[in-house]
Image 1 (cartoon, each protein chain N blue to C red):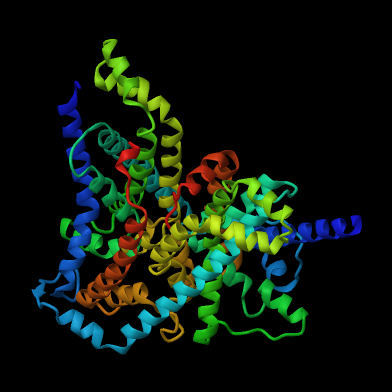
Image 2: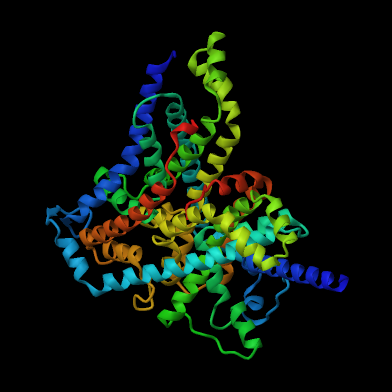
Length: 288
Length: 276
């Protein structure tokens, strides 16, 4: 075909630029993790695996790793349960469906800063609307910023609020492709609503849910902004997971090498999930 | 029987209402709080909208860096959209039209890169920007945003371009069009919905980003809206009215876009267009 050479050139230039922009930093992060430097302008010194050894020796690393799994695990389960619930609702015959669907999706589009600020305002210790509501029912305000458990709960609930629409939309698309005859046949056989949901809907949604689960795992494990904006990893590192630890080491403790080592470790964990994803969903060249 | 049906309908309506309140109440509360003066924010308490004051907006726009941040956000988002559209169209188109080994690897790399969390890229990128002496500039932030929007753009457009049969442009080229002309006149118009989707989501990624902005920009007047608004939290006592006004103004362009372009939003979101 004509113009092939031009096309090759264009491809090489554009892809080269993109790779430079994305792959080089990823490589550079690895390189940093093998160096000792205490600011971005100082002269780096090659120290081999010293940063990794130091990081793996710190209890705060293991605590952060554990918190990361707790945070990701609980948020993912809640998002999937709620997301399937919303999708089932949106799939049913309800009044004003487009509007309801739009409103359900909306939280996902909001910048994290807005969500963090609005919820902090709603949870304000004196005049927050939640605080007032809770008082109305005779309960006392929980100082959520002062205990690790309460702070973690708040961060988890906020994350669920923001990122559930991802599951909702995916599950809704999945539900709409379930053939109606399956439900008809089950109804004829006398299956009740719950049985139909459990034995038809869930198995039919399985492929969609696998994608959702993997993508949620990849992203929730590395969420930085919601935790940083809501708690800064506090109180007393009570909500600090690996990304927050990496940030604090790099920009507050000026341990750039150790921060990079923490990032590299998160990166390896992330890559495991990505490999599983590619294993289940290979990019099909035949589609082209 | 009909009583049971009625009960079931009532239950469904109740669930719908709960869902709406759950999803929309915080946004509603943010907006009505932004219009309240201190008296009604801190002393009187009502769930209903009002009273209606503009004092928070006046302070925010008159006495803070907010208008500056708004302009910075627009500039960075606009730059990100332009770079993303240009490069992702070129890559996605040439990948679908060329035959060479390792094509899947190119697309796979993009998908992999699309899954990178911002903070993991932000630290090495910042370090590189320091070396190039372009750290703490809006340009560096624009480049950083492209690291998330480009893989997305390539990935989405790859899906669009491969649906357009090669015959379409070959026919045009037989009729005497150059490849460029065939591409611009025949292929691009067919992928317009894809281009709109990529533009919307690149804008959204850039407009809402906090992580990159936090790492890349330290000069207050160069900050974008999310990072700028965050500095107001740390600096003095919390002025909730102004913070809610600031939040509402950040959300406003998104809400307007969402109202008018919701089918692109839903389609793009269903294709997994927002990482997060």
